[in-house]
Image (cartoon, rainbow, N blue to C red; front, side, top):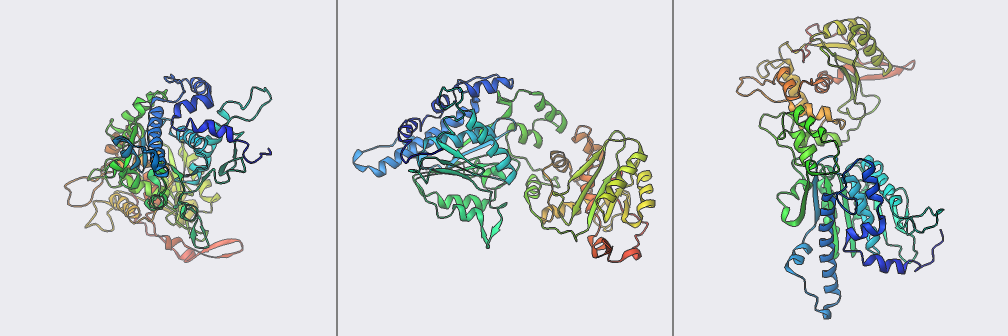
Length: 546
């Protein structure tokens, strides 16, 4: 599409009039399209825009913020006009931005992508930076939603063969950037930048920092999705850049952490921000309210951390007897740990029984995230043996640690005969190596796992089951030795579910990597440091049986 410089000046005059009225802009650009899309999903639409009541409330705050800051800009640029701001407008001018804590299912991904369009379309020559906690969240979630919304807008003309919408006609949307097509406005664009934690280093300089530092623009807005997982230093970089009159941040997140910059915007630093919370109980977008009841029943009520985070949009509570604080768990999900093919591949194997599935997890070094878990619901123990053996061999596993509790003794026994010393069995009923400190081997293994989280030596997948299992594990108070609540109590806390994945996680970290480190390749196969002379004692110190 060939565009002449200045071709969109009339359109620009019109959209500036909608700058401070997001709901009117939504109706003008989308008509009934959002309404119809919502109704097709079974949503009881309660607004003329099709947005939820919570989304409309957030837009009203955005409008107040923009209107106040633009008025302040006009006051600075035209002193002779005697423009006077109200006390409320003065307060809004001081705000760093808007902070929204949200439960799941409230439409936050749709809203922040819709907001990106609204800002881009109504602030001529603006520069918008969008970032998120991971590249997947940024490109697969946000950018996909952003593109879909562009084509959800009204057609640019009544011609039935028209493919352009009022948005795509004026803005070129590429894979990581959206910019005004008019050559007269080369600085009018939005770009997606991976957060500092995820950014690759180029010539020793951080990509995200290089992309944002030194930009001091009149209209500069930062949109931060899943903000509770973004490093504090990233926000500091953004703050240092916000020197223009209409500069602010919009941060939105599911509050899985209880500390950090994002959370402090709602608590310690709340006076500097416009604060909103989207409680999923109150959202008409959530059609299946039974999901809330299921979380409430499964995890022990509305004050449980899973319910607070997923439904109420509140940060987790940390009890004094909690072994794995929520912040440690969330940090481990976004942590990147280096590993190589020379690191031994260690597996943990929890044998299912009594209706529980069998679970295998894998790691290299402290990295579980790149390997994760596989599950088998088979109840026939012979078939479970074959499944585990196949999994072991196909991945060229260096060591598998298996649980001999309950039905595990039969399965692990067969595997030891076939796999030899690389199949290690453990029993939680054994004494701990530090018998003076831990009540049993189970407590020792779990506490070792806790140390890995505390010392930032573990990286785990973003797995909701694993997260909730970790949160459920607690100390038994008033014991002379460190003791962990039993599996019966854990089942109660998890509404009948077992801690299969935590069991596997702790098992795979219960062996010394040096005993299974890979040496040199010979004939296409790895040889081990101590080769066949590596013998393991039959005092198999496993855990998690009882």
